[in-house]
Image (cartoon, rainbow, N blue to C red):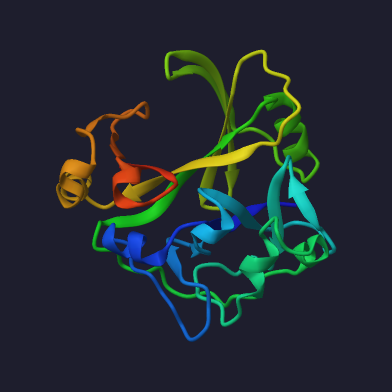
Length: 243
């Protein structure tokens, strides 16, 4: 069994993402979405909360319903990167709907990735904040996923543990305190995108981005977007492509 990140549900208005240089699809009555690489980002609106409110994963067993380590999760059929003609998929992934509907798989046909004026071409990684990293690792292991690597680092001046999984084309970076064993749910905290030209992307965002600097990954460069200034509730970074 191999899990893939096929869709991410974000509680933002589509107009904000369009102003930030993302191409937003809105076909008929469908919930607007961005197609970034092979992943849909479904913009379900701020009335559903803030930030990333759920995701759809391919490779989950038939009949899966509920959460993955506290994160609202929907089983998909592994067909990503297109706008669906139904709002049912996104609605089922939100906590304020009938939990029984969360077992409804997504059925979106595959399509070519969109071109984005801000230069984004793919998702590099999604950051998952965990109050108990060992518990999160166990939750992933229940679906056959094993960490690719682990390292120690800092976040906001505090020591952290970073554990990396590969779910399809997306890396999931689990972040938590080294000795944490909390009881709360994990949350999807932020997205780092791959951009074709990091300097051009930084120029596009102008004063809404920090200075481009070397990334932790050798040979790559990164910049942080001041997302709140753009009315985007998801922490956002841009990183240069691997060479």
